[in-house]
Image (cartoon, rainbow, N blue to C red; front, side, top):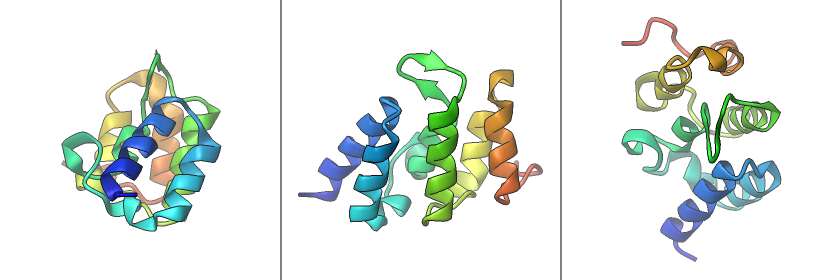
Length: 110
């Protein structure tokens, strides 16, 4: 299976808040931590800070995605701290901002 197919499956799993599937896909394909996906193709972690399908504040699943991804190979600084910038767009995402900052996201990133 191609990386593009796996990336599409990863995006769908993230959108569906399916943590078990996200872990299975990324564990099977660790290169996806650095794949040109997400906002600005800066990495899949840039998709995680917001619940988009349907829109909702990041709940336990989204926080678990971010934590697992960072602890297993995703760079918290993807896209110039893009995950933190996405989280900072909405006051309902403070829990995500806290998690990202606790893992080294740069609050002074431009």
